[in-house]
Length: 436
Image (tube, rainbow, N blue to C red; front, side, top):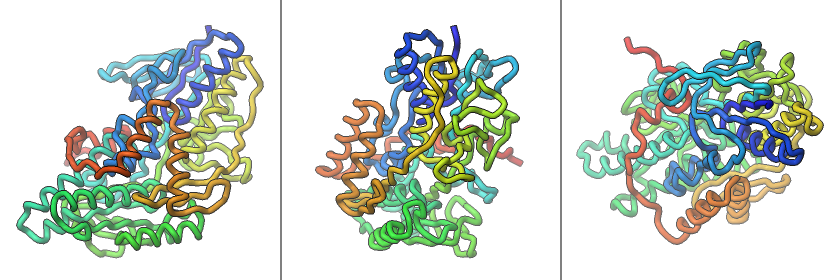
C-alpha cells in the first residue's frame, strides 16, 4: 500500500489531507495517509486577535484533527529531518523520543514562524501572535497589568502598565491593537478608570498602515485608528526592548510593560535543514507544487515559494487565502501522482481582503468592491464563519459574536498561559540564545 506523509497541520496541510481523502474515495483507492504535527489541531490563525481581545475562546479557533480528518492518521511530533534517498522523515514526539516514518509521497507544509530580528531584549520581553498560547498570554498579561495599575502608587509604573506597544501595522498587528483596546475599554468600565488612560502605540517601518488593502482603504483604517486614540507611528520600529520600556529607532522612549511583535513571518526552521533550493527563505516549488528534482515531494503554504501565475516572476504571499487554496490543489496533485486524476497548476483569482477593526467597524474589498463600517463588518464575520472548516467551530464563533453584541467581554485573567508558554521558542521551535 502506498503511503503519504504530510508535514504540518496548518491551513495547507489540513486542506491537502481533506482533498486527498476525497480524491482517493472517488477512485476507491487504498492509501495510508499520515499527518505529522506538534499539535493535534488546525489553528484558524485569522481569529487569534479575537482570542487576545477576549472576544473568542481559544478552543473555538482550533479544529481537531481526530474528528475532522477521517481516514488520516494524526501523529504528534515535530519533524527534525528528511531522508530523501531513504524516503523517511525523522520526528521527535511529545516525550522527546526520536521516531521515523516511511513515505512514498511527502508533502511539506510546515508553515511559518514569526520573523525575528537581532533587537536587544526582543526575545526576552516581547511576545508574538502565532499560537493560542501567545494570544491567551497577551490577553491575561494586559488584564493583569491593568489590575496592578489600579493598586500601584507609582505614577510612572502606572502609566507603563497602561501602555501597550504593538509592532506591525499589517493584518494581524492592526487587528490585534483594536481588539486589545476593546478589551481594555471593558476593563476600564468594570475596574473604574478612564478608558483614555490606557495608551496604545502601533509601530511599523512601512509608510502606510496595511498597504495590502490599497491606499484608499489603508487611509480609512488609519482614520479609524486615529479616531480611537491609537498612536500610529510609521517609519519607526524597536531598537531595544526592556522589561519596563522600549527604545525606538528614532531614539524616543516609551514606558511599557506590554510589547507585541507582529511584523511578519518566514519559513519554518525545517526548511533550512532540508538542503533544497529556497527563495526568500521559502522552499522553491513548481507551479504544480512539486519540488524540482523530487517528483515524489510536494510543498505549499507559507513555507513554499509558490509561483504566482497571475503576476509572472513573483511568488504568492503567505496569506490564509493562498494557504487554503494551495492545500486543495496540493491534495489533488498528490492523488494525481499516485495515478488518480490529472495534475494541475496553482492559479488563483483574487477574492479580496477582510480586516476586522474591533467594535462596529471593519474594512473589506470583496471582488474589488471597497467596503467599510457595518457592511464590511458583516462581510468580514460571514467570511470567517464560511472559511472555518468545521460546523461546531462556526457555531461557537457565531455565538461568541452574538454574545459580544449583547454583553460586555469577560474581564478575567485565567492564567492558562504563562510567560514561558508564550515565548517565541516554545510556540515555534526557535532556540533561545544561551545565557552568559
